Length: 377
Ligand code: ARG
Image 1 (tube, helix red, strand yellow):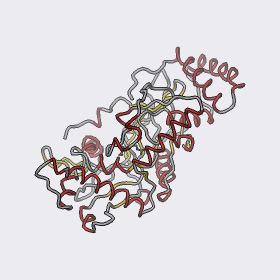
Image 2 (tube, rainbow, N blue to C red):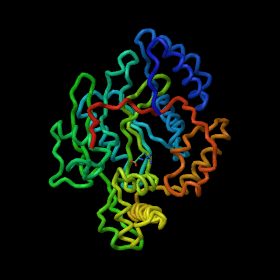
Image 3 (cartoon, helix red, strand yellow):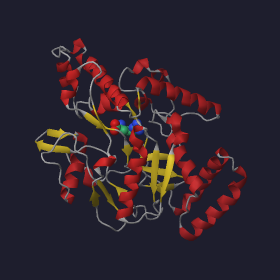
Image 4 (cartoon, rainbow, N blue to C red):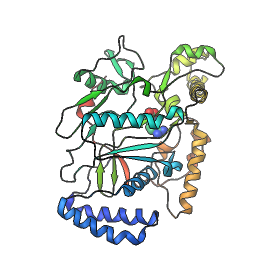
């Protein structure tokens, strides 16, 4: 979700008060609301902004996950761990915090949902904050080898070029799965890049439960999706750097990252491997390839002990989420077009639901795109 306007100092208080009221009533501190709002009022009057207490930050981040209309995995919102990195103001400390996030979240495959929250923007100086340029902390480079041809992830061509302009050297020879460096800029500083250590990066080679030749396709994917280009908003305050992760749902990799024609585009090679008739769409070779590719992804993560959920189980969990939220007296908002899995949609219960897509606060929003990242293939 995009949101163009966030409150400036002069109208921060209503957003803060609204958040404090709901947050405190959820965590059983309703009696402290008025006093806290008075303190915040004074803080905003003197500094133009306010600081969250650490329990407010923690519960606010969990509410933001709970309010993420496009996320099917929200049943687990309460288990989100929150790291407070608001004091971080040096490049070394940024690198350490990102490394610690990756290590804690990966947990040798027993993936733990985590958000690391860096300093908030001052409402009157929103551009003065840490910016992470990566879309995710682990992502593969896209090398534009010639006009219209990409080796690696086509979605990362612009960012890969940006990294190279900063001085980053890709592996030689470049491959399809080269992990990109971390790129960030502290307020008043220049773009800075540094590669995560190899031993922090868990990846899964993709093989198939009953087709031994599948491994020869050389496909792989990383274990943990850590989104690093969204802005966390809590009580009117913006946290422009707040990388967060859950674990993967299989179709994100099997259907989209590896299957999409404008991503790794693997369906033709999978069809060939399984001897499917690609001359006519009506043979359903794409559908059958999607099934085999998704089976391979689920099987490989399972075999390597890396936590992943299949789309049927995730859909069931989402239904459970709707039920538990209903019991708490809260309605669930959702974006149907994102929540229905990109395979076998109608076999999943969400397909048959009507959902309201109103965007509640706290939430995660798309940041405005960085010009540095954009470049056509
Ligand atoms: N769809 C994105 C990807 O494939 C990741 C989005 C977040 N996914 C998640 N399971 N938390 O890389």
